[in-house]
Image (cartoon, rainbow, N blue to C red; front, side):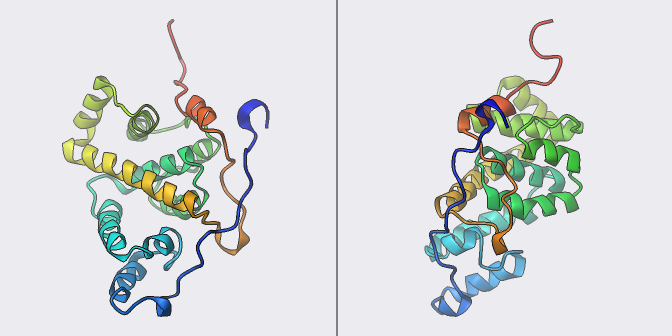
Length: 215
């Protein structure tokens, strides 16, 4: 693996027992019903934690429902942005859950493999490159340069850029929730992401494409 690429922790046991539908209070079950209509993981993943705070869970669910299914951002690009946040956060479950969704939406395997290995993808389409630069800059530098902002607004429109921004921030929250509660891959599956130190992730993902630097 070499230099700073070595993992710095091992998978740990989950911190919250899985809630069952039957264990939920009657007034929370309508929310669980709504989750079950769209969730590929039933009440697992982030929902197992969110349902500990039912009113917050309702509000988060409505936001996630919009960002996943009603957003103005193309589905392929939306899922790419989610995977970017999963990679930045070493969020194993989030990557595991969204990689197949991204593939069905048309995100190329080559792009996902590079990102999974914590590299700037080499073969991105122009719209994928724009989403990558926007989300990585915003997440790791907490700012977007003027030229990149204008490029994004020109290419996508103001509403889609705002939707993309909120999606990125929301999946920072989801990543934090999954990591804090140590949600594992179901059935003991292998973790899809090598875990890197935050500064190593920053170094790798912010690396500029060739030609890089002054000529």
